[in-house]
Length: 225
Image 1: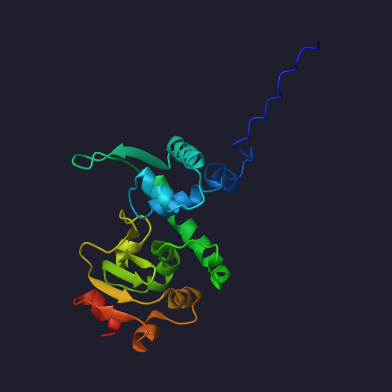
Image 2: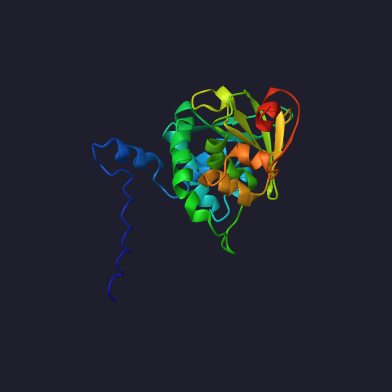
């Protein structure tokens, strides 16, 4: 009886383009599928593994765990344990990980025209609108926390100098803010118009398509006072 041949081993996947090029080096770290979307989630603040899995529909548990491990090894993210009573482990971006904010913001600007029509299979989360909306809010000069209410849910963003890359805080957060300086209510269709530049923030507020609530300097600036 002929001896059975051992199964051929699958080649090890190369993890580097081996090119002395800044773009290639960057893609060595963040070019894998799902990595930049994990960064998108962590830009909003520390998150548990279960939260990441819930807000990354379509990713398998094995792939998510592998990408997070790669990000830890690459110095983009760290895992730490929250103090009691939470006693849960969370992942958060390092300074180098936060440095990807302008990259993701540019990708969001470039990809916004592809959002003209929502496909039946498309998942959606309210905070996914935060990145493309940041540019439309960049003209706001007052520092503060702005809560954004969409039909899909709520998120909050920093305005003024706190929104600038390298400011040290998360550019946006999940859900309603603990202490919002102002709130705006709009729908996702208008949000995409703002992102595309078809309408300005001031125009949408003036026309009543954006409802502004709150007192103080940020709310006054939004109302054009």
